[in-house]
Length: 235
Image (cartoon, rainbow, N blue to C red; front, side):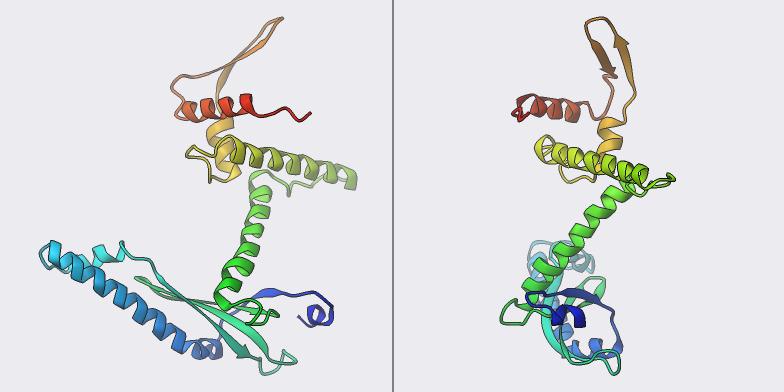
């Protein structure tokens, strides 16, 4: 944080571990989130009681009909020893049927520049989503398999994994957009769409790949194939 603050034009948003002081500073926000959720719950339960016979299970049903209450707030916080000065901390309080969930981030962005809710959703959460894509390539396209004895060999393996991710991501966005795999991770697409048993027949004129007609993913495969046929050739 000190390094970022010493550089011109460099800002940061870092996750911050919870502690008793931060949770105490967010007490008012917790109370507001709880009250907001209880008011929404009460409204839905009252409506259900006008339609159905009053019952204890109506509250459980109402839980499924309303979203959790999410509140954000900026705090001015400084640790007792490790920080050289106070900094802006943004807390996110989510209250629902399972209770309270509190998260904290520390940032150099001022409140006037980025409001707390916008900072958490558009700055911090987007950063986390980017990390998920790194994990997707590492765990499902094996970019961490760099076990050769040479740097060049390991670099080549990483290139292959990166090329595969670019192709899989293009397949997902261009050809699977209107299928049940449109939001799937690349590992799921590999398993359900590409890792299939098939009968391969090779002749002098063509290579025929025959996938079983009982494949549960044949309609997705066909939809992806139709999209691939109409994509423009940019070569």
